[in-house]
Image (tube, rainbow, N blue to C red; front, side, top):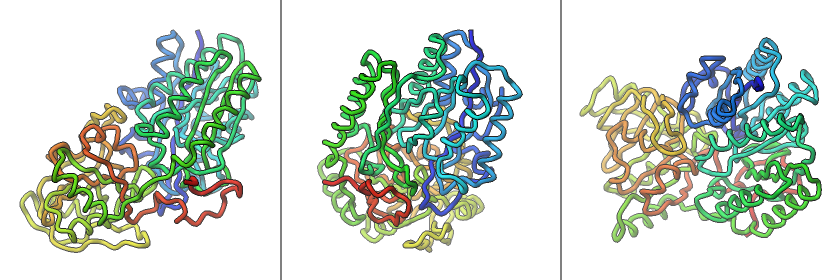
Length: 497
């Protein structure tokens, strides 16, 4: 049996976002565990739905010895600071050297990390491992569906696999699949799959359109799973890319690997042709706030179940600060009688609510502390409806078992609109987060969620309809609104309808 080291370093970088990820950002507990090492890493990730937990389970089941190194993630934001990157990569490499010899390494990476000093964080990390341990050392990597896969990643990883579901309800499955591929390499006595073909698409895919609960992404990923069963292939990957990273390598990619060169090339070319043919299907409808409210009122006259507004452009899961209040203002202006708006990150207002207590009325400014251009705080009186310490356990399929730490939080009310205010920056993608403050999501009329797609993992089942709604924020749904400087010239910013 083999000794296999495992580690993870996750960040999804929105180069248009206002805040950077420093070391403290990786040390904080939010929707995922904080930076953790060795045996403490195993304790922190146990029972949490992550790629690395799926990989470890598969390795243990096969009888291999797992050697834990370090795992960490930070909320999506602007670039990872040079200091944070060098410290974390340095610690992983130092731990690997200290625990050497090992037979292989599994890495739980994202694939869209941009740093202050380099554009390809994962590719550079893998290159450093190769320089230290040579071409014969097997290194298997699982990536997020939103990875911007680079040639440097492909050249330095023995095998790469990728999520096939968005919301990411298959993270553990992907980790297990990657670990299984690594074990197959070890059994064959190989350090790397023999043949690899990387194709980059010539159009960007907006975040909301990569959702695999709806077509065309649903059909595309069903096709990926079908092709992956082809004899002679080791992996078939389609990554939608992370279009909010203004780097040359940004964009969707196809990666096919295997033992038979002809089969690998044919599969990659087939998938490329099919994705070119369905480009127009990735176009999207974005509602203005007043349009969404009007449409929701029509739906609520005849249907049951909440109408969900996706406040995608201020999604903390894509680099937003979670502090813009454009849709909140629109709900009040329209005189909406019952709606829940969540979550606004505002530690100052949350603390004021805790100091005042349930039932009190406080005066304050809601949101817009990050200084994002195009929005301003909402200033007024708020009635304190409920308070919480922010600690809850996720119950939805994607974050199942994650121990949430939202910080002090409060449910405040202005007229017919209740707003959930939290202290920690994270997207609202699990019903348990609302239940923490006494809100039962299925019983509401309008739910506004600061999330792009991940909320669908737990809210799709109760939603009468989901509307993507425009609001201030750096996670642009219409990519044509972004001032790209680094994209390669042969890629279209949005799909052509």
